[in-house]
Image (cartoon, rainbow, N blue to C red):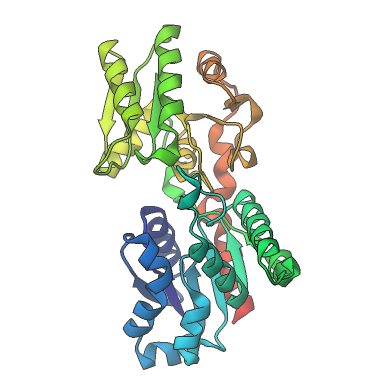
Length: 350
């Protein structure tokens, strides 16, 4: 089978997904077209033009299935490349444009939201990485359509909603096969250093953690950008002052990063936005107990005794570790556990 895989905003989690899919199904031939994850406003509206320009006539003629991320302006692309009009298309949602936390209401991009609705309508099959992602997309899309002056019926999405699938981004199998190591009573916060990952909540928990006198280091790691949220800098300074700071910054070496997770007892999330939580899932596969907000996607795979609503409650989770095996909670997300569902999806549509 010839599969045309489109990732027009090829962010880290999108790369993670497409590399596993392309490597995991060697019997299929994948043609991969990507665009850098930058210039969001332009990319979300202009990607169809760029992708259409990159495609060759032979690629289009030989394509049996299109597998595209939800950043793809699929409706426009089908119009620009008529040869794709009759090809079955899977639209994979890593996130949706209706459930992002905004620093200001004006950050909501109506064009991006409408583009995602058109793309959903143009797809043969919608697939989401979590039920939370699926539910917030359809709720947001229907709410937006109800506000339109011509009263577009929300039922226009009914068939797509009824048939939508949930298939998380797979977790690599080798993470589950690692031999358990001796664990330190350490805490790892392993997320992008951006506002949607809850830096203010992180600072609040770090303050409570320092005051609690609990043993163990706190590691603040993850992808950094030009501007670091002040609350993260404050949290690092506080931990440093109390000699509680472990690793800091981005760990480029994957082996070292996984070793840190495998040796630490807890993984912490303070996110305001999380559609799946790959960083937490990987840590759980390596044996870390999660300490996560009682919201977003987390109730789908994190037991209640590991979720919190306040900083004090988060510290209580650290002081009294849960007794379950975190690896078992995310085992259904392993690649080997999902491979058959992905394979059946490809075969069914073609």
